Amino acid sequence: MIKNISNLGDAALYCDFGGEVNKEINTEVIQYFRSIKKEKIPGINNLTPSYNKLIISFDLKKTNYKDLKNLIENFNINKYEKFKNKKIEIPVCCDESLGLDITRLEEKLNIDREKIYENFFRKNFFCYMTGFIAGMPFLGDLDSNMRVKRLETPRVKVPKGSIGITEQFVNIYTFESPGGWNIIGNTPLKIFDKIQETDPNLINPGDTVVFKKITKDQFRNYNE
Amino acid sequence: MSKNYFKIIRGGINTTFQDQGRKNLYHIGIPFSGAMDNRNYLLANKLVGNKSEAPIIEFAYQGPLLKYFGTKINIAITGDVNFIINRNSNQIIGKCYQSITLENEDELDIISTNKSVYGYLGISAELKLKFQWSSCSTNTKARIGANDGSKLKENQEIDILKINKNLTNTKLDYTNTKIEKIRVIKGTNFDYFSENGKKIFFEKEFTVSKLSDRMGMRLEGTKIENITDTNIKSEGLIKGVIQVPADGNPIIMLSDHGTIGGYPKIGVVISADYDKLVQLTPGSKIKFQEVNLASAESLFKLYELETQNLISQI
Image (tube, rainbow over all chains, first blue to last red; front, side):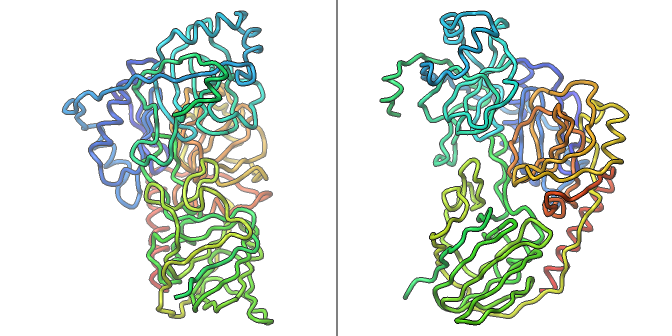
């Protein structure tokens, strides 16, 4: 449930679901997000779900904070069905030319690369949110012995398709972008497809993701 | 019928197609985009008799040099812009906020913006552009929108599908004013900062850094000290949010911002001040002034009224 609603500037509602990051709270955020989106409330021009917050921004010419807050506080999500989630398999090549930070991770985690990859490939990951850049999924959770901080100095260019880890999360760079996550491999799969206007994201909040190891040859010859 | 088109002889620094932007895509990581200075965007369209949501050419600092081929067409430039029209061997000094009729082989040279960042070129025509999610707005980072998601480049052409035949002369008496105090509402992490940090935020002057673009405006000044945590769990952003990373220098989110961020939010620029904020050039000095939500809402109504009033004068 929403614990508190406050204003973020003069044209957005800041809905707080709590301070922790876990699947239960995030599932509630996603349920609210999907239900409100479905309702197509006049004046709302964007909904941004994240781990434990939902930001609802609106057109100040059409509505205002007080009216919209009142509406959201009395919004009944129970009448909406549970939404279906997908399970998606993502091929990843871990050749050293693509797993840019694996040596650094071996040192930081004090685990050898075989064990790092073994741990990574046996997990099911939950998609908490997508964004920052178009289509980028934020997946969790990594085991506690696999958690590291961001790079001290972020890269100016992280290659498209890179799989990065930081803290308990995994993400995928949907296009070349600056970034500070620790890169362990690369996927040839298109995660964001701007041509698909109705559903450009392969992975959406609530979905489950598993990674599958592929060889460098399979990576090179990958055909979608 | 021969085709009407503009040929780009010089692209300019950051020349893109923009309109009112695209809604309802933050949740997949796509920002609003759209014209940075919305009032000047609307005025340019009105001056050439276009619909208010029509695509426009936005330029920053140095604009494009375009050569026109075709039958007579009206254009208008808004902002604070120096430009000339080369017709045969004559040079005509351009004036902002009025319609200008271009003839075949005229050259429009948008030399520079004057102590401001963005200017707008409205063309009284339907342009051949690709729309994505009902908007032509170009986001060069995500490569989304018209012109394959790229800036306008030399040697390319802008094709015109249909010229508005009504060549009425329009004019508006308007001067852009400068802003020195940016009005803000306290952010959701305001209490992450030390008493001294909060004081610095509202009392000290900040300088707009060179590292500013359509995504964000970086500021430099006295470091704002965080006493709680320099990271938060990543959450949604909106344009106008002022984040303070560990280095203590504020960054203001602008129209092409990343949709999610993990730095504490000290404040949010009010909607009424956004158009003027984006026009601040690197090196400009600014101060933040706190307002409450009710004031921000009335200031926005006033801003809207002024904009509508200007539009109705054309």
